Image (cartoon, rainbow over all chains, first blue to last red; front, side, top):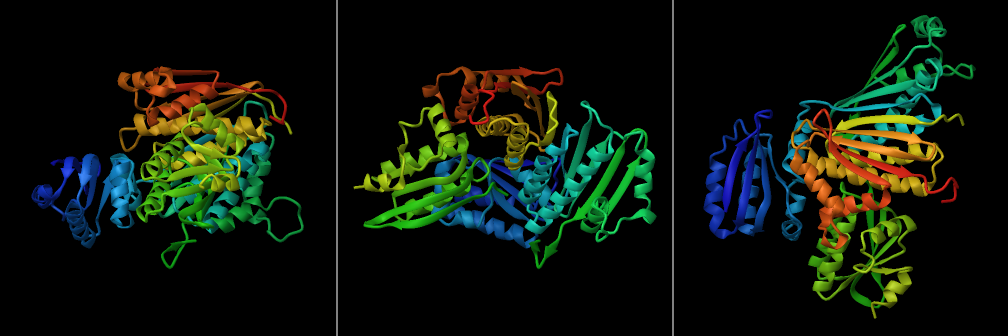
Amino acid sequence: MIVDIKEVAATPEAVILQFSGELDFESIKSLVDAFKTIDTSSRKYAIAEIGKISMISSAALGEFMGFRKTLLEKDGDLVFAAMNMDIRAKFSSMGATKIFRIFNDVRSALNAFKWQRGLAPEVINLTFPANLHLVPPVRQLASRIAKQKGYGNKDSFRIETIIDEICNNAIEHGKRGEDQNISVKIDIDQKQIEFDVINTSDPDKLETLKALLKPTHEQKIHSEEKRGRGLSLIKMLSDELSVDCSEKGTVVHVKKVREVKNGISN
Amino acid sequence: MESQIELIYEDIRGKDKAKLIKFIGDLDATNVETVLEKICNLFNEGIYTVVADFKKLRYVNSTGLGILLHFSKSAREKGGCFKIANINENVYEIIEIIGATSLLEIYDEVDEAVAALN
Amino acid sequence: MNIQLPYKFELSFPGDIEYIPAIRKFVSEVLLVLQFSPKFAYRSEIIVDEICNNAVNYGCKTEDARIDLICNVYEDGIDFTVKDPGGDHQHIERLKNAISVQSDEKSNTGLGLEIVRMLSESLNVVIDEQNLTSVRIVRKREDISQNN
């Protein structure tokens, strides 16, 4: 067995251990020695890249478990990356897949770590033509992304509603025309999701829009008016809402904090 | 987090070490490892005879097809089989495109696949 | 419904496979809204899935790598361009080889591109002016019937 230890400049808490050969009983000493070279007070997140490993013994797995325990005590973890199907089947038969997280590659493992630590939000950008019929797929996209990133059903539904209302408003009150587009920027991390929805302002509607946005003009949700509840609804569902309206364009910014009850996403 | 896929297991009457597995959802690169693990667990319990009901499997990509081929091969090597039934038109087309129709045991209905176990 | 094609959609997302299900479903749903057949939408979903998976697995080497997806929808079809930062000639050669090799010589990793090749009118791979690996696929509508 050969092991290469690599540091990650952009993520100082992480370390990559690249293995090749066989993790058999005879490699245990080398494995333990490799673990000892890692300063676990600063390098708490270890990624064991085992794509080039042809076999793994239960003794070796035991050593990995031991090292993981050490890291967990320091609020770290040991994960695996680039596992081939045969090794994965072996892991499964030893019950190890219930203990260790396994990623397709080192990059995914590092991104998962950064996500967990809230080091940087992930950004999705979308530009689509300003047509109301395209809003349902857009809101579903936002909702699915939120769910995929671990937000609960309730939060995902609220996010869907928020995006729906903002995009509908942008299309209805924005400039009309075949060449008009709506831009949506989504910033998402463990704790919150933020949207910026940008459209071109309709110069004829600008003053009306500014009047609508004044606090004194807030529409009540329960009023009998057929339309106009969108902004109120967005305000109720989100944690922050701001609208910047000018001749250049309208930018709606919304922040929604993730709801977590008893450690479970809502 | 993964795409949604659910596996529901049922016994096959008259067949001791065999399972009917209903696949529900989409099988793609995000959940293929989970499915791989579940089927491997079955093989580890000595169950190598599987009939997979794809009636509610909406979508499969090449990664998903890859593991279906793997299951088929692994089951055969252990003296069993991995039969697939109720494939929808769209999924079947993809299997056909990559030329896997001759590599997988495909049946129109679950009953046919079960009868073929005898 | 007021639809005046062509329409253009642009998506940019982190190079991680977990985004791909939402992206491919978005493309499929948009095509259904724009009155393409369910079959066309499904096949397009497959194409987006396979190309994006390929872009993530082989074209994203750094943690901040991103994928760009551009869709132009016309009356008679659609073209997709998927860009990844892979950008080196080895990556391009691998892609081109995967597209041109006969099916029985392929490994699992080539299956995806084979599916895309069979479902597309054309499939081109280049390194663009920004040094991004760019894969462009063109698909024509099978027929204008909604029953396809």
